[in-house]
Amino acid sequence: MSFNTKYIFVTGGVTSSLGKGIIAASLAKLLQARGFTVTIQKLDPYINIDPGTLNPYEHGECYVTDDGAETDLDLGHYERFLNVATSQANNVTTGRIYQAVIEKERKGVFLGKTVQVIPHITDEIKNRIKILGQTGQYQFVITEIGGTVGDIESLPYIEAVRQLKWELEQDCTVIHLTLLPYLATSGELKTKPTQHSVKLLLEYGVQPDILVCRSEHPINNDIRKKIALFCNVSAESVIEALDAPTIYEVPLLMEQEKLDQIVLKKLNVTKFNEIKLDKWKNFLNKFYNPSKEVYIGLIGKYVELKESYKSIAEALIHAGALNDCKVIVNWIHSEDLNKENISEICKDLKGIIVAPGFGNRGIEGKIHAIKFAREYNIPFLGICLGMQCAVVEFARNVIGLKDANSTEMDSSTSNPVIDLLEDQKNISHMGGTMRLGSFSCKIKEETLANKIYKQINIKERHRHRFEFNNKYTQQFIDNGMIISGLNPDADLAEIVEISSHPFFIGVQFHPEYKSTVENPHPLFVSFVNAALS
Ligand code: GLN
Image (cartoon, rainbow, N blue to C red):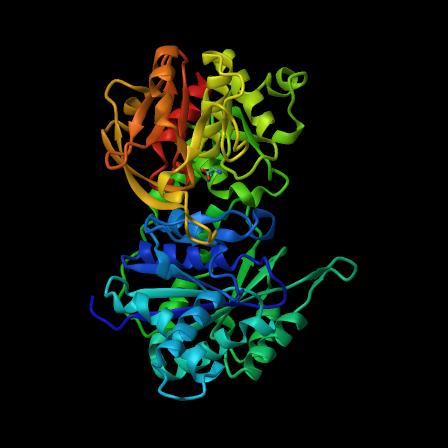
């Protein structure tokens, strides 16, 4: 179908955390299910260049794309919903916008002009929005504006939306997500915060076309009409977004509310296919009707904030549905684990995952959990730091190198079984300098990894500075831990496993980033399957 790329903006009002990312991803899913090509972009108003240097307590998980961008966790939702890879262009922060504008200023690009928020910053924002459309790959670009309308830092973004509404005319529409609070004492849903938030948008010159209203209770016609009247939209453009039992239900809720059809109408798209959501519904059906359940321990140091391990938790949901089983995750704080309590805490677990991470905190607890999984034949999956800890545990307790460690934890260890990557040794800047993004891995035949992936050449995403120290390879092999996956270009260990154990695997990469509803990741699928047997 040939038509100009359509741009859809999603803004948020009233409070943060209303789930703009999920609404954007759900709309994208519906448009995709009608045969359109869609991508989603997130604009984040903070000044960090990217979330790579942010503590997970601040902003949850840092999601990594194939091209090595460290991005907001909403991009994970976009990929999981659409099963289409995102890239650096899909996440832009204020820091990156300003950096680009200042670089241009230093090069003299602005020819002596005073550099200002309008037009220079807003032009840069608009360029970043249009870049995705200009690739020619997408019929729809959905841009989610981070933050809440009224925040000082999101103003230039809202101004860019205002300008684009003029420039793009029919090819652009704005969805505003708000909250209808419920007052239990009067038994009423209140519309005033929504009215005020739309007024604020109007003050900035943006009339939203569609209002998606989060609510704990159904929105009746009177309320829809009232919101429509006060906010200059049609009643059919007031969309109810009820709390859902799972984020994966939201596309179906939005379909019932005809969000996709209203968007298409606003954008003057009159020809579209019937919606095809069979695979999605099939997944949901399995998710809601598991025939069994399994307890998996997830050992990490940010477990009180589950957003920090978002992609792992979602990958387990995908793998659970495929295995007809409900995965119940026991979130275990690695700092709570010691030699004395490990068997009590882990005794009922059918599988153990040791999570990625940075720094020394909680490391010894992770090593205790790995020893327990190894000795008691419990299926084990170590991811990135989790794999490195498995190597340290094996070196200490099987090979007998008592002080073995990663030099990240002890730079003076006499047995650095995990050491800094060679090309990391002279790096002083922390931002964007890790081994990031997709790299090849060659799998050895007749290994657990080979059985899991059913292929030899794979690509997985990375985010690390340290690696297995190849000086120790022979000692590990002699004692029963093999390297079953290697990066063919740099000889870096990508996968380790213990052949005598029913399922013990550590991966230097992050398989969780590539698990989607349509394509659950084979490592998680096999891990859950092993936990069930
Ligand atoms: N801290 C480790 C490294 O940098 C592991 C990183 C991770 O788990 N993502 O190599």
